[in-house]
Length: 308
Figure 1: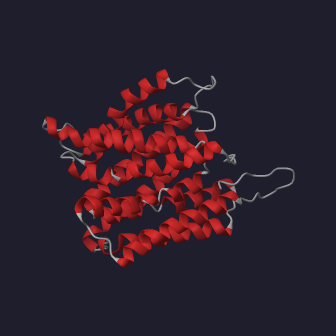
Figure 2: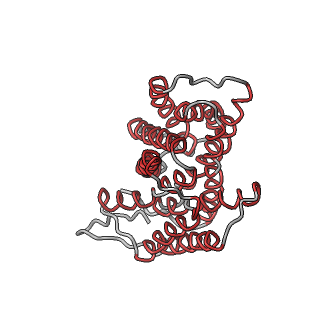
Figure 3: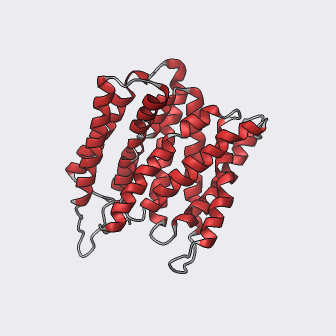
């Protein structure tokens, strides 16, 4: 069962970490588009390049207590993340960045559904209202950039499938955080993810090595910004924040991406997009308030804990 997380200074710091992590992974589609190798190979190098730095960091960071590793759950977490990255990177290659970004960010819906079906979780009306508002705001924010066309259907379906896989990664990572450190999860799941992606890349893509030294730059940026900083801070936050709320909080990604494009590339946001960004923020606030007023569903003497 997912457990309630205590509120306090740790939760406040985790909120900051979650939002900074959302900024980091919000830049991932840009780096993927700049990569000159295939989408799965790009995801593979994202994992491989992260392992030495994360392992070094884990080695110098004292663990709070000794515990046996849950190797099965760590491997499952890695497989979920491998499927998410592979499907999402393929989606970016086959459809628009806007479509791929929006569809993969449907993961809060699947996190909530998994909690309801698998863990008998119940969610407050305020949380569900925040979830819906954040999703509607994300659609409005992407606005005119969304292009649902028949020739992009395969990419759109892959984007939605990646949302399901990311929900699986989110739930398993949250469960692991009850007994494992953030760096332990990041290192061991990265290894499992890289192994899974390597097999797919060798079968599906002609070249897995970048052709020039300059071709490594987007891969290094993807590793440092999106994997180590982005995913690292998100996994850290999962020890202090409910998984369902964290998934909603990551809907900040489209807003961050749109604002960055406005500031860096003069891609102006119109009234509709600005309104959508405001609704995303409102939805996150409502979801947070709903998570603070969580409810328990009692069954005899037992009280299953809610994801929020």
